Length: 93
Image (cartoon, rainbow, N blue to C red):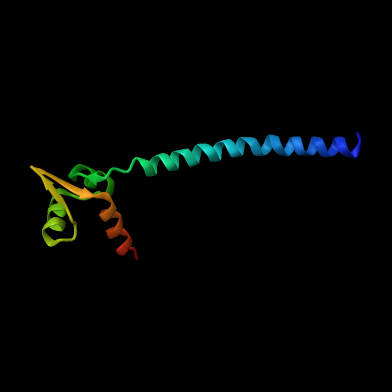
């Protein structure tokens, strides 16, 4: 086997190792990107309970004390997801 053939065989071996890794990284990247795009503009009470583990009483208390900014549409309370992220960043320890 010549040096050129050995080099080509080595490159093909490396390519066979790297290609599946690249494919897995692309899948991970698409899932991460999809998650970012799927963030709702507003959360509802149920979302806050499921995502952050808050109780109804805690959500009410946070609304009443001004910790949790909200918009009320009829009987529905809506919480701007961007403002929630800002609150989380500001309170990061």
